[in-house]
Length: 126
Image (cartoon, rainbow, N blue to C red; front, side):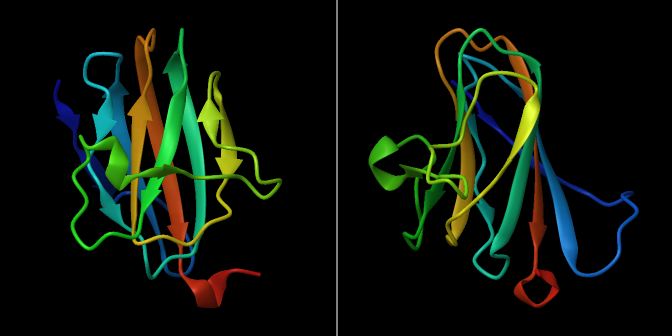
Protein backbone atom coordinates (compact mmCIF):
# COMPACT_ATOMS: atom_id res chain seq x y z
CA UNK A 1 0.00 0.00 0.00
CA UNK A 2 1.34 3.40 -0.98
CA UNK A 3 0.24 6.80 0.27
CA UNK A 4 -0.84 9.06 -2.58
CA UNK A 5 0.76 12.51 -2.30
CA UNK A 6 -1.36 15.63 -2.12
CA UNK A 7 -0.20 18.10 -4.75
CA UNK A 8 -0.97 21.78 -4.28
CA UNK A 9 -2.15 23.25 -7.56
CA UNK A 10 -0.43 26.54 -8.38
CA UNK A 11 -1.78 27.30 -11.85
CA UNK A 12 -5.43 27.77 -10.85
CA UNK A 13 -7.25 31.04 -11.51
CA UNK A 14 -9.02 32.19 -8.36
CA UNK A 15 -9.80 35.18 -6.23
CA UNK A 16 -9.04 35.40 -2.55
CA UNK A 17 -7.22 33.06 -0.19
CA UNK A 18 -8.13 29.57 -1.37
CA UNK A 19 -6.00 26.53 -2.14
CA UNK A 20 -6.68 23.66 -4.52
CA UNK A 21 -5.17 20.24 -3.72
CA UNK A 22 -5.14 17.03 -5.79
CA UNK A 23 -4.74 13.40 -4.71
CA UNK A 24 -4.25 11.62 -8.04
CA UNK A 25 -4.94 7.94 -8.72
CA UNK A 26 -6.40 6.61 -5.49
CA UNK A 27 -7.04 2.87 -5.89
CA UNK A 28 -8.06 -0.08 -3.73
CA UNK A 29 -4.32 -0.88 -3.42
CA UNK A 30 -2.90 2.65 -3.08
CA UNK A 31 -5.80 3.62 -0.92
CA UNK A 32 -4.86 6.53 1.34
CA UNK A 33 -4.07 10.11 0.50
CA UNK A 34 -1.36 12.08 2.26
CA UNK A 35 -2.69 14.34 4.98
CA UNK A 36 -3.21 18.02 4.25
CA UNK A 37 -3.33 20.68 7.01
CA UNK A 38 -6.62 22.59 6.82
CA UNK A 39 -7.21 23.87 10.36
CA UNK A 40 -7.04 27.48 9.17
CA UNK A 41 -9.42 26.76 6.26
CA UNK A 42 -12.88 25.77 7.50
CA UNK A 43 -14.51 25.96 4.06
CA UNK A 44 -13.78 22.77 2.12
CA UNK A 45 -15.33 21.10 -0.89
CA UNK A 46 -14.34 17.90 -2.67
CA UNK A 47 -14.65 16.81 -6.29
CA UNK A 48 -13.96 13.23 -7.34
CA UNK A 49 -13.43 12.00 -10.91
CA UNK A 50 -12.51 8.55 -12.14
CA UNK A 51 -13.39 4.88 -12.21
CA UNK A 52 -14.98 3.95 -8.91
CA UNK A 53 -16.26 0.40 -8.36
CA UNK A 54 -16.21 1.27 -4.64
CA UNK A 55 -16.30 4.30 -2.34
CA UNK A 56 -13.77 7.00 -1.51
CA UNK A 57 -14.34 8.35 1.99
CA UNK A 58 -13.05 11.78 2.99
CA UNK A 59 -11.55 11.63 6.48
CA UNK A 60 -10.57 14.23 9.06
CA UNK A 61 -8.40 14.27 12.17
CA UNK A 62 -7.75 16.67 15.02
CA UNK A 63 -4.74 14.74 16.32
CA UNK A 64 -1.43 16.57 16.36
CA UNK A 65 0.37 13.99 14.20
CA UNK A 66 -2.09 11.47 12.69
CA UNK A 67 -0.85 8.43 10.79
CA UNK A 68 -2.72 8.16 7.47
CA UNK A 69 -2.50 4.35 7.61
CA UNK A 70 -4.04 4.08 11.10
CA UNK A 71 -7.86 4.18 10.82
CA UNK A 72 -8.14 4.96 14.54
CA UNK A 73 -6.57 8.38 13.88
CA UNK A 74 -9.35 9.40 11.46
CA UNK A 75 -13.12 9.86 11.29
CA UNK A 76 -15.39 10.22 8.27
CA UNK A 77 -16.25 13.81 7.40
CA UNK A 78 -19.87 14.78 6.71
CA UNK A 79 -21.65 17.09 4.32
CA UNK A 80 -24.01 19.88 5.51
CA UNK A 81 -26.88 17.36 5.83
CA UNK A 82 -24.66 15.36 8.24
CA UNK A 83 -24.26 12.51 5.72
CA UNK A 84 -20.83 10.87 5.58
CA UNK A 85 -18.90 12.00 2.49
CA UNK A 86 -18.61 8.73 0.61
CA UNK A 87 -17.90 9.39 -3.05
CA UNK A 88 -19.09 6.56 -5.30
CA UNK A 89 -19.45 8.42 -8.61
CA UNK A 90 -18.08 11.50 -10.33
CA UNK A 91 -19.26 14.56 -8.42
CA UNK A 92 -18.68 16.83 -5.48
CA UNK A 93 -19.51 17.43 -1.84
CA UNK A 94 -19.13 20.26 0.66
CA UNK A 95 -17.67 19.48 4.11
CA UNK A 96 -19.41 20.32 7.40
CA UNK A 97 -16.59 19.83 9.95
CA UNK A 98 -13.62 22.02 10.70
CA UNK A 99 -10.58 19.77 11.30
CA UNK A 100 -6.79 20.06 11.46
CA UNK A 101 -6.10 17.42 8.80
CA UNK A 102 -7.86 15.89 5.77
CA UNK A 103 -7.03 12.64 3.96
CA UNK A 104 -9.14 10.62 1.51
CA UNK A 105 -9.27 6.82 1.68
CA UNK A 106 -10.33 4.47 -1.13
CA UNK A 107 -12.30 1.33 -0.35
CA UNK A 108 -12.35 -2.08 -2.01
CA UNK A 109 -13.08 -1.99 -5.73
CA UNK A 110 -11.86 1.56 -6.38
CA UNK A 111 -9.97 1.43 -9.68
CA UNK A 112 -8.61 4.95 -10.31
CA UNK A 113 -10.08 8.07 -8.68
CA UNK A 114 -8.67 11.59 -8.47
CA UNK A 115 -9.88 13.68 -5.53
CA UNK A 116 -9.69 17.48 -5.62
CA UNK A 117 -10.12 19.64 -2.51
CA UNK A 118 -10.76 23.37 -2.52
CA UNK A 119 -9.95 24.87 0.89
CA UNK A 120 -11.08 28.42 1.67
CA UNK A 121 -10.09 30.70 4.54
CA UNK A 122 -12.75 31.64 7.10
CA UNK A 123 -12.86 35.31 6.20
CA UNK A 124 -13.81 34.53 2.56
CA UNK A 125 -16.64 32.13 3.37
CA UNK A 126 -20.15 33.56 3.19
